[in-house]
Structure formats: structure tokens, C-alpha cells
Length: 91
Image (tube, rainbow, N blue to C red; front, side, top):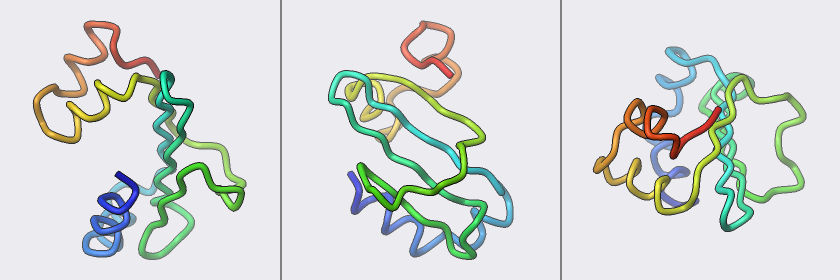
């Protein structure tokens, strides 16, 4: 999971930073994991996962969900809007 985010940031990070300019946190409630995508304070973006060097900046958006929902979003089998409307994603 972390490697996938790091690969995406390595390839698209600079354009994501330009278009998003946000820090987004994913909190996976059932496995007690936190993934932070910093697309604001690093030129090419940065991924933090359970990392003590996690950005000192508060996320602009925090999405809370279980691991199953997170995986379904990554696979494209559920969209973010549907996840929110069905209560599987909270922010």
C-alpha cells in the first residue's frame, strides 16, 4: 500500500502538488493505520505512513474508513461519493 502511494507520488507528485495543494490523511480505523499525503509542503509530494516524521502540519482533510473500503477505493470498485453517502467514509 505504502509502496503504491510512493510510486504514484514519484511519478505524478509534482503535478498533484500544483493541482491539489493540500495535505490529506487517510485513517484506517480497523487496523489503526494513518496514511498522510503531503501535496502542499513538498515540491514533489510526500507520503507518510505510521511515521514519526509525519508532517507537523494539520491535514486539510482527514478521511476515516476501514481497510476494506480503502482498498475498494484504490481498486476503483467504490467511489468516494458513494462511500460518504453510505456512511463508509467519514471526514
